[in-house]
Length: 309
Length: 80
Image 1 (cartoon, helix red, strand yellow):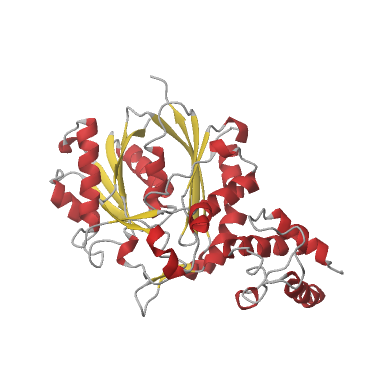
Image 2 (tube, rainbow over the protein chains, first blue to last red; image 1 turned 180 degrees about the vertical axis):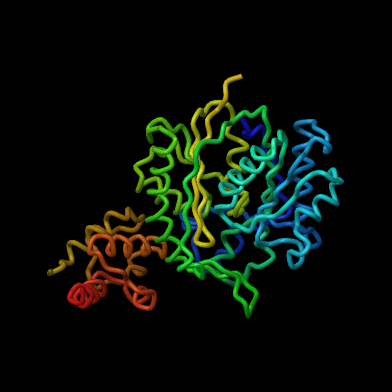
């Protein structure tokens, strides 16, 4: 069995205080707290590259789990804001910066907010089909590279972060079945404008998509894992905004204590948003539903089961 | 199908806005009533789901009151 053994998080020291921007965007503190939910947004350093963020997360994982780089057989980076133009792939740059072994397979996957879920499926399958026992899934998608800081719709939401998840044959969490989905007919709802090179998001379209599609995907995933909604101890949903988490919880009839909103201090960190929460759940939850949804449009969910050792 | 202001008002109540919407006048702008932009998304989604319509982007920006929604639905439902 290949599952999740540990997760490390890298949050840059820099941040933007959204409270100080309320006047600029003609918003109230109440709206910030209860609707967007992001009080602070973490920001990488100006000279800090995506690969540097990846390395910081992996080094944190190594310090925590005390493994040697030679043990790592594969490393996947999930990002849509790579170093440079993405050629070479960011995972190759990470390979060089960390000094990973030459027989370690590294590659990038290009996904946003659904990236951790897809990434778990990809790395688990890659490891199982190749007989690997230790691999790392890294998420690092600094939207500060493309955000229009004058855009009220987006500049109050996104933060920079990276995570590194160690998958091994000595897991703490078993990874269950997945349900995925895509809708490319709405691909421009979340995009980087070709002319301005700035990030744009159609807030209403994304809200509608999330509110109408994600609940069904979650229900289907729970059923695929032979569980019932009441058995799930925790729902870790992509931290798009406080309002979308509240809307999903209401539409699915979930008890508020089972649905986490934890991104208020650092923002929507794209593919890092789910693993950052997962890294801090502790030992109590037995069944955790993970769900990621966003750019593509793309969505995916799975259930993790705690392994008793 | 005749849609009433009370049906729209019920959708607005269902959004559980922090604004006081108990006696929301059908001609009052949602924004003037203290209903925020995200709550308006929820209202419009509620209208779409209840009346099986799809409100286009350019129209949605103008639907800022119960009366505007009623006017829109008169045309949209007739066209369905």
